[in-house]
Length: 428
Image (cartoon, rainbow, N blue to C red; front, side, top):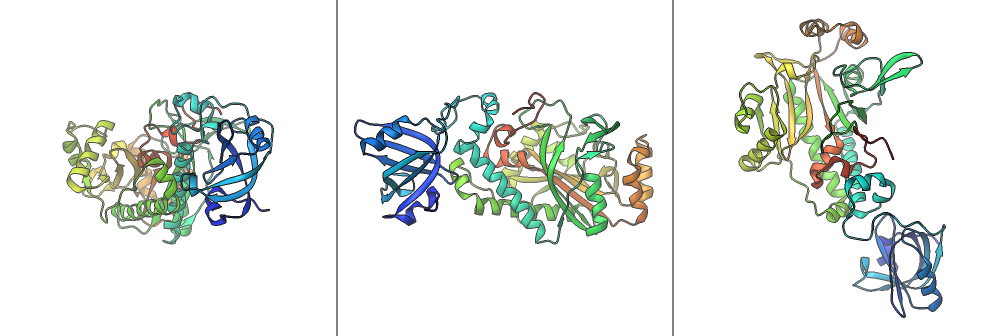
């Protein structure tokens, strides 16, 4: 008899079926025992009235893996509207040790550090697993949207010979006796691959050795990167980013609807044209001093409130950041060379995406590095490629965990990360 999932039970009323999963909860009454079995799809209620079956249920511990063969009957009060009667219950392993918290409760009452210490068990809770389903659907939407626009998925090295952003926040390692680093981003490689495919994207881990201990930072996170050639300027990149976000959220709604319902989340609409403000204007809106070189979290929150109030949008672009706050490969604004053809996208008052137009001429790279007093040698292999013809191009990077945390209303990115790595955590 083929195993079926809990959500398939309503289609089998009157039939004898086989399910399998974890003991989620037991309720032992004098003459009957209720066994709730959890599988990847949801919950199934098993009713045991036979003394032998009831005794078998009584012996089980929560989280023990079991197989149940029983008859499906309708019961509107049970999960999925049906329940299983006349069961034969067979453990598929030894009795499980009790978890350090109750997984059957509507919410985990353990502190976040305790949950993270016991992540393999905590992630079984419907709220935690639902967030990961949202994450998976978001990645599927990212890929599908860009595939439909003729982007090619690439896979670039995560061990590199030089840093991408700066030398101050990289993880160094020994590479057969030579110094090497964990990649801060696929930035250099995705630009070079524009010279091959014109439009590329990557989903992969990036590593930042920044000693942050905040609710929005991780030392390893998943970056959704895209780069496209033959752009006029950064606004062409912003259009692609807008469509990508819309595709991601549509896929989340379509593929993770049950997870969203579990979390009580409604997907926000993406405006046909996301509102945009220049950096200097953004400072004024946020009430920040005019000489601020960057936006602080409080400024981002103020801009998020402004976008919601003035435009009814959870999203807002901030464009034209000072060149001093952007990497050396950023293209300056031809009309205002001190400012960049770069942007950030805020989602609900939180920076979600950084992107912009890149330099594409070899001589401009030499000049940009010289202006910052940085040598060419460490990035010579990257810069040299621009001697061989590269189109005007640009791209963006979305932090997956930050995106999901903001979407589902999590207070901490660690709540939506299976096994987070940060300043303090290297296990499990």
